[in-house]
Length: 107
View 1 (cartoon, rainbow, N blue to C red):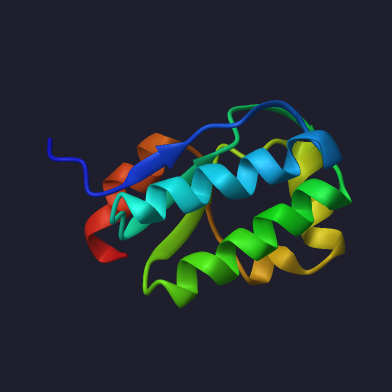
View 2: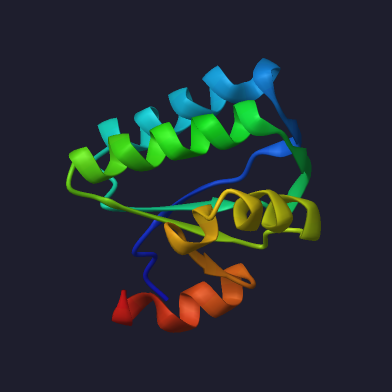
């Protein structure tokens, strides 16, 4: 199967200490001419408001570059943060990477 997207898979706690790294990784994928970027939260245990800020800034950067950003494998804590801030309405979120791969052609 041909991969139509690039994946960034952060790990552990996405907070103020990792926010800049998060944005840099997304920027790097854009510089590699990625048109669809997936952030796979499978290995993220916690995200705070700094991590959310990095995610939102990354979305703006991706959209400005004419690319798309999707999320998958979001745990309960991260989903709660997205819902409390209404960001779950802004991002396209898939239950798993497998679900995303099944639907990638429709994106």
